[in-house]
Image 1 (cartoon, helix red, strand yellow):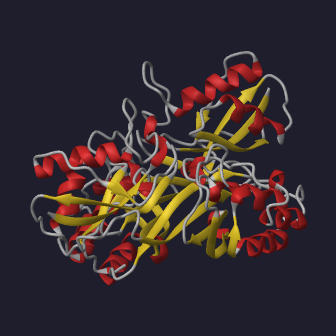
Image 2: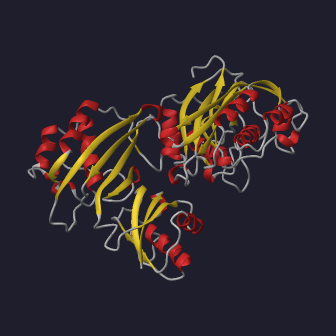
Length: 251
Length: 251
């Protein structure tokens, strides 16, 4: 069996998330449908992780075991010809037999995009959260810095999450202002993310920027002393999985 | 009657163009529906010009005569609350009684966006034409320069156009490379545009960049000597009406 890693970008607007479900359109469902045509049999793919309904990806990754080899240059084109236009495979590479898109993932990068224009920018509306209100950028930078590093993020996961080990490391929480586009993006690079963690952290940082939350409240939430300070969750459509990093793979 | 100019942005994907039609969704139709709610009577609006099905706008303009005054700050919000999310009014201003969005327009700016990534960028797919092929940028710049100035553009209008006066002035044909986004945009600023002129010029410039057309062929087309050299028309979804300029109005 040929263990294969594919890189996938998608517009999550019309999907009920990445992970396959009965009776709902999913990215995994579309990918498996296309793979079944190419390989003439059903293959199960493993994503690097789920993304929620409406969340986008420029660099999702998934692996599957194929019954025969297809040229790495040709495979994306073959799949893209079968996929809907809002899902695009951007690369394929044969990987070691013990590689697994989820368990072998070392770091992930998410972005959250905020539209700062006075009125929503129509061509950005599906990919950014419109927030024209004044933001204290100095306070936002300080809040972002608080999240960087290794913390117990148990206050920053959605209710109902079953994960018991809640310590994660964020290597980078970076603000990128794009004045020409009237956008503000926050990039998160981490060892792993709890359920809705990126959206809850974003909601917290925004509340600090709006002057509705103090930095000391954020610190208390990160110490596990005040889970009320976390969030709220910002809309899914501002979030994008930018990249999944693996060891020993050409990125 | 209060003569009012509104500025409008829209994602043209789901519309059969700007101009109202029976039995087809149009931007004008949606605007008139929202205005009828706000003013409690049907009002006819005049756009600065049509845009084709699928063409977008960041800065379309339209005017209408209203039976009463609504605060210029509040009007866009009132309309946006009634409009679908892919149409956003970004400004309103009271104008002189003889102002007309079409006849008073002095200059228009269009952009055409080309996606240069190896695979289509999913989040740009509705707003750019995917063309990963190698382009000779020096030749493209020279072709763009040929179009600048006052010319008889009769070779650069769609068949069936009834306009007999075909001389127009392009004040600016400007290439903007956006390497971080893997986009190439061409901006056209002109006194007026013939039917499909921006898309036909773009198609011509691209053919030069691909090495399929010589600059001398472009010159011949601009001299009216070789209308075969013009075009082809590139897809509507890469085109965006960026701005309509008027005299004596705060831009």
